[in-house]
Length: 539
Ligand code: ADP
Image (tube, rainbow, N blue to C red; front, side, top):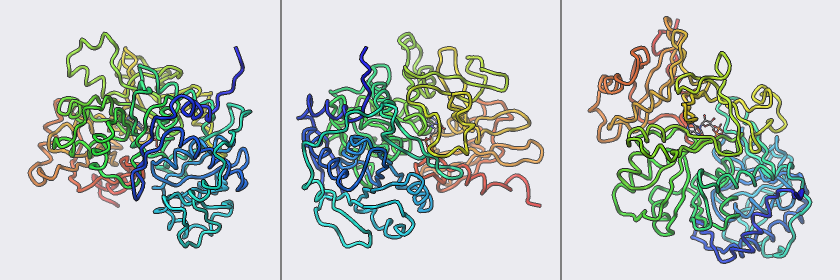
């Protein structure tokens, strides 16, 4: 067969050639834009040509700092189209981490959303590698700013070449994208995505047994474009000619509901917190969501109650998926096998609340204290992964080389595997609770607690115990209408039938809010810190 190199820009070229009339709907600060793939293609070529004029060369990094919108999508293709690397910067990182990753990546040019620009005025003196800033806004004017030199995205595009040719002879193993993990500990770690990884990952998203993304879909990635390539959806959707809806800056659940109903979105993807918020709006019945064929939920565990709410109360199919920055990210999707359709609804939900089955193309091991675990749904071990879209190292950083020992990615996720191959994450290695030499899964306890009708959110963390080393303590946020009306015992009695006695939390603490990371995951480190002396008194 032909030794054709896989290349990100060929995905856009297919959309230009075969789907020029299909549209991208993009919400920005001031309006909702509708662009065809023909227009997106020309604008992307214009952007590539102007980046080249600004001195971007193959291998250089170009940073983006923006929400989900068409300009960000154009940069997704324009930068790799030059053989350069798009570095999607997480806008929710701390200023110190933003400075660290821009310097570590040595970004040459930064594309920044207009509402996020003021942040860079404060950081600019710490960013020696950045040679130019481009403000992404609807205007061709540049607001007065201390950033130098500062260009208007639209003014640059007006000057650009709509027929610019993307670079052809790119080695498929060369990098096209770069994302940093959101760092719950230490400095963020970079993961470089090769052209090959992004193309093969897009294929995986299109498979019928994964997300089955296709031309007939209207795909709305709610997951940010600065977080693991918006789970690869913008690349795959463009390649397949799906319509795309990019929800833009500072959206609310109401805005998402309007976009779903107005644009007839069929597939959308995001973290559980987004879907919890949206459920509260959709359950009021004001929006027509009949077009939705899949709400994809990942990034943290999807509680079974959330799956049940969407499917049984709203009639919207809800899919649980799992992955991480290091895996581009798609690793598993929880879809039933054909013969599992005969199971009872409760048995099916139990399976579908697991992280699911490995997608084609990847290999896994689950490694316990005594080697590979038994596939009995009981024995716990660390999930190891290998495959063409799994990272083999961190970007210019060997402080965590053990993560890639023996040619496998050690995910740091503790899992069980059932006899059907369904993976269930029971914890992060660092969040497992080690009580009296045994492991307790904080995730299992959280899922059980969240099933209580009064509970909005729950996080269970290990708290030091003199007798047992660690014991679980549950932090619970009640729904508004239940505040003050539910006691600790109600929660403990509710979950007691599901667990051995020694698994039950030693305490339940009601809180107004659970601290979260920049991407909306529970910040358990902070909870552990707050509760350090909860069960023992400080000496
Ligand atoms: P971070 O930068 O915080 O690592 P990632 O998105 O890369 O952000 O996070 C990956 C981690 O998120 C996984 O290792 C896993 O612990 C958790 N995660 C992702 N998806 C799921 C899921 N469906 N269920 C439970 N945990 C998940």
